[in-house]
Image (cartoon, rainbow, N blue to C red; front, side, top):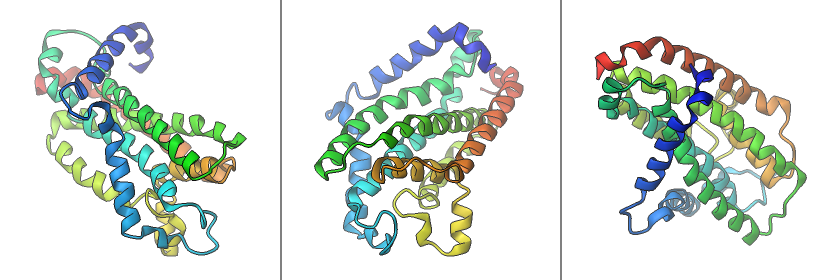
Length: 260
């Protein structure tokens, strides 16, 4: 079904534009809310001295903790926002599903793509933060879009899977809220995986989101191209996520109108 989307790109573009227009329409801070949450979390974890978890001799020892944390919080916020918006999206679009025939993947995909606006604003803040702390551009920064492409595929796959599951089991949406909170601490968002125990580190290293975030830090903060070993869990996670998500969504789609 995903292969049919290019022919219906207008159907995908319109809900993305609508989502972007209404998201901050009545908010006093407007689009500033896109970058406010990760900045606040960065400040909180800095005040709580999470920087002490970056031990002496670690590759990021000497990197300002605020920068280290924000590089993790920014992609995690896009991931979390995408899933929390996409998971209930089919239920919220129930009237449209009943009345109109169209590629139903458009509904959760629009939520994921609309979250790119927040990410774009956050990247401006990140650029300012890097410049403020004297982090200079390097050739390895070119790896960031490639890594994000993997993250986006991974996110889309999960969005399709969770939005379909939520049509049949509404608990999925509530469970996701808990998993997102716990998941941040099971990912190298605010601390490096290497600081955990050997057993925990081995498990966390298999987390695709940890692979993406660590790869961003390698490129942006160390000026190093992410190694194949570093990216392997992320690549495998992206392939499995989109394959399973698209398959489950396609098989469940004919029943969505009945389940609304």
